Amino acid sequence: MMIREPVFFENNNEGLDVLTEIIRSTRKRIFLVADTHTSVHCYPLLEKKINAQQLIVIPAGEKFKTPDTCMYIWKRLLESGMTRFDQLIALGGGCVSDITGFAGSVYKRGVSFIFIPTTLLSMTDAAIGGKNGVDFDGYKNLLGTINQPENVLIWPGFLLTLTERELKNGYAETLKHALIADAEFWHELRIDPSLVELEQIIERSAVIKHTIVCSDPFEQGARKLLNFGHTIGHAIESFHLKEGGDILHGEAIAAGMCIEAILSSVTGLDRTQVEIIIGRLKSVYKDKMPVIPPADALLPYLIADKKSTPGSLRFALLRRIGDAVYDVAVDIQTINKAITDFNRF
Ligand SMILES: NC(=O)c1ccc[n+]([C@@H]2O[C@H](COP(=O)([O-])OP(=O)(O)OC[C@H]3O[C@@H](n4cnc5c(N)ncnc54)[C@H](O)[C@@H]3O)[C@@H](O)[C@H]2O)c1
Image (cartoon, rainbow, N blue to C red; front, top):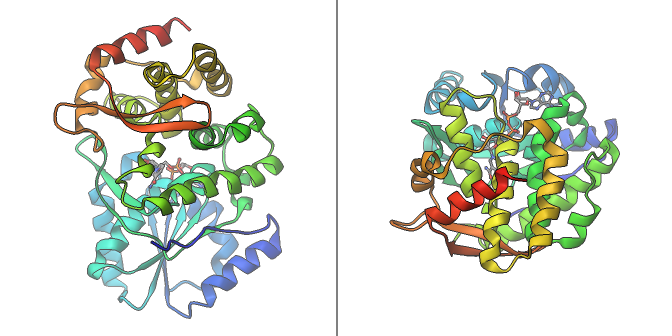
């Protein structure tokens, strides 16, 4: 399946001009979805150049990645007369692209949508691969589609207004891409990269994801590798969200990667590498590494996980740094032991 590579633009005004020229060249009316932060920090940089027909502003954050927000978008699209010949654009982080991609995949049986990611997490991961969706009834991404954006346009300049915590949040997926696919990249990644270093990191990380997705767009095989850290990570995230905790996706995934690195002894990851991985992740996330509840508390979320099959929890695990395998069955007792082990680190 041919999926367009993300397009990377230089981090200067000319880079942004080239990006907006690509949008203008569609010659379509633009309907743009932003959230309450990106409408303030990012939209003004594009506003005059793309001359959108309609700006739809949704509330920011995971709490609003819901069917209700989708309904709001559909209503606004309908009221403002969007047709299948128009262009939908998401300007924002992973929440905005996940919701907009889903809304656009369903509206009038599907309209063309473009992603302009504005967080590190969305530039390196969420905007790439065509997974769209919303959370439902406390479960992450329960409703969604796999449907590719027309284009993913990446301009690192948007990162300037992102908080330090949000930058680290995004870094988790880059660390994951290195761990599953590129040992050399993993060794080059520093604990605290500068914005200039991030420009190169974004491209390398996004290309790893794009390459894996192209080899298996509908997650029948290799794409499952991208789930490393996410089976436990999503359960931790859902657990804390339900408890009303303050947790970001990348922080949950960082904790998930620690536990799944320990579980990877099943697939041959040696203990020294486990210690290196956990040491690095703890140095990056420090006090933002979430508390991990006992496996029993995570179980309902693990069972609801889309990757689980009836009666079996399946994981993507590491054989060594830079090399992963998928569909490894692990039982709940082993997960419990891994959590106890991690709490001693
Ligand atoms: N579809 C996928 O393949 C995929 C992959 C990974 C993660 N995700 C999803 O992505 C979401 C997390 O993504 P995220 O962290 O980008 O979330 P997000 O969209 O909520 O953005 C994080 C915060 O940063 C703000 N923000 C965004 N860009 C900004 C900017 N340039 N300046 C200032 N503030 C800005 C947002 O308003 C929000 O408050 C989760 O819902 C996760 O499930 C999806």
